[in-house]
Image 1 (tube, rainbow, N blue to C red):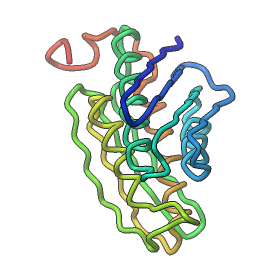
Image 2: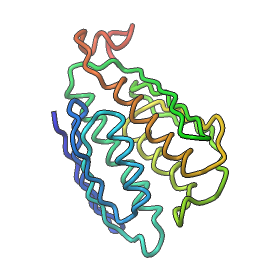
Image 3: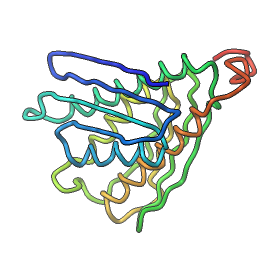
Image 4: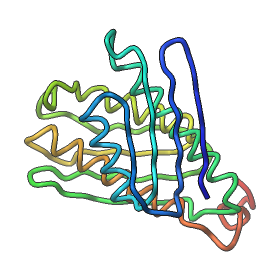
Length: 193
């Protein structure tokens, strides 16, 4: 089931198409090549289809575009959850990439919380400021109403750590958003989220 969210502000315009049940070519187009690479890795290893067309004031600072992309993908995840009839809710993954080992644990519970256990070995990957990745995942967490824990267990290379993190997040999201035949009542002892 493809969900689509379009968000326009004075700073950014973002269109996201997301299908958690279908793998396929992902097309992130944000004008930020490293960020596109990360989004593509997340979708590919999560086994879901993600299209992103984003533009904004990156000449000022890419912060707005990155955070807003997280918000819009999060809104798409929440819409997918509501329209699913029920999902597994929990997911986790630990992913290595050379020197880096990263962990993502998610609860699609309707209560947003980001636990960020990350120290970058370098400040940048190429010319991309790695601190901006937290802004993306903060937006994803808040708008997606997720409890998300991200940890870089160890790393010597910031690019490797970031890529392992996005891959782990993708795998954890895939597990959490797998259809649950028990419907919404099967997602919580309360009978609903």
